[in-house]
Picture 1 (cartoon, rainbow, N blue to C red):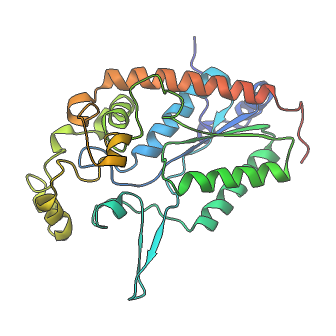
Picture 2: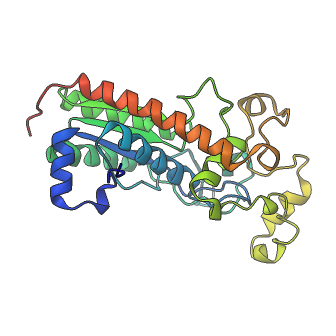
Length: 284
C-alpha cells in the first residue's frame, strides 16, 4: 500500500483538493528553537511534533502544515534596558545556548489566528494543533488563540494536544530533553542525537564555547549532572531525580518508535472524532 502524501508543502494542487474532499483536517505542528542538552538538535520540539502529525495524518486523512519553530515565553526586563526570556534559560541563569524562539505573546497569538483563518478559508473544517513545546507560557497562548478563533467561527472544530499528554500509560513524563524526547528524536532523526556529548560541555566541547564562558562556568559549578535537562515532573517540583528517565541510560530508537506509534494513533483518533463532530460545510 502506498503511503499517502500528507505534507502540505509537498503536495500538488490537485492532491490538496483530493485531501480536502476526503478529510478536511489540517494539522499544525508547533515547536521552538531551544536548547535540548548537548545531545540533541535545538529543533527537537518541532521535529517531533511534525513527525507525529505526519504519522497521524496518514491514518486519519488530512494534511500537515509546515511546523512553526517559534513560540512565546516569559520575559524579564532589566534595569539597563535589555531583557531576558524564560524557558530553560530562566532556570539555568540565562546562559544555555540555542534558545532563540521567543515571540511577544500578542505576536504569537495573532500569528496563530491568521494561520487558522487561512486554513478555514481554504476549506478545512477541523484544525489539530500538536504542540511539541510545552512551556507554561506558550500553551496558554495557544489555547487562547483557539478560543478566540472558535468564538469567531463556531462551525469550525479546533483541538490542541501535546505529544506527551496522550500517553499517560507510557513512561513519558513531563520532561525536557530526557529519555522520552530524546528517544523520539532518535527514532525520527538518529543523525540529530549524539548521547556521547551529554556531559561534554567542559570536555571535548570546551573549544566550541570559547565565546560563552558563562556556559562553561555553569558546567563547573552545578551540582546537577545535567544542564537544562528536565528528566521528570517530580524533579521539576522537588529538585530530586530518581534516574528513571535519564537520556543516556533510557533513550533508544526502539523506545522512540513505540512512543511514536501510540502517540500518532491516539492523535489520529482524536482528529477523526473532531471532524466527525463538525458541520458538513463551513462558509467563508
